[in-house]
Length: 279
Image 1 (cartoon, helix red, strand yellow):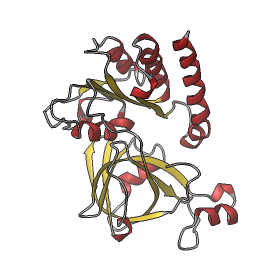
Image 2 (image 1 turned 90 degrees about the vertical axis):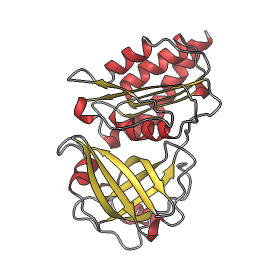
Image 3 (image 1 turned 90 degrees about the horizontal axis):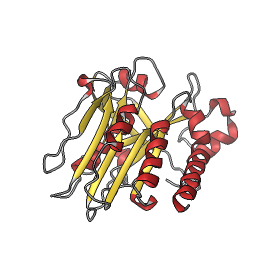
Image 4 (image 1 turned 30 degrees about the vertical axis):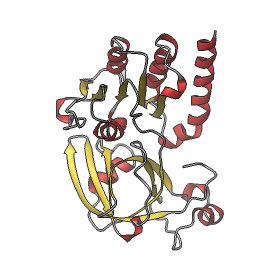
């Protein structure tokens, strides 16, 4: 979803919730407000959920331009981006999966306590990646934040696709049943107290690539993503256009803080690595 595009606020209602694992909750949204929702082209489609600060109400219908003109910045709704895990156009049901770590964060605690019937407002969908059906093989890499997108990508792989998928989670209880149509399952890497992304970097750098014709999706904490971007671009020679790669979040940064610097940070990293690759 381009920044300059008109941002109409969508509405949906919580239909049901499900605790998938100790650290992931599934929320299914529905309602007539989803008529015309445009997901389906990409496997990394996302929506930005809008959360008003406690005690703040806005005139209906929500108009973000009006809200930003009439309310101080501290009272603007906070945004959290979540991957569209599934979209059922016939039933008008939108499925989102949330990483939950107790009371940490904003959307996770909300997902843990929300009940059917609650109204949800959002922007989107956005998205840009889907598995290239002509690729020689696919590399999918991510932590919990990228799990829904990687799961959606695996389920849409073409018949016969060669897939190497690595998902880092805290422990065995956080594994989920995910396979490609041909039955290829991800490699689950249990963090077990190690730094986020360390196991992923080890897995990818030690992997024997089947060929140079790879289509890669690498997302999660920005630190390990930066390391793998460098490895894939400089050491493996993967062209930038064959990579969907970005930091969904960054250790030590709030969501608002990371979004404020993410674009410039990614641009600087890409410029540095493009220069090194051309040298």
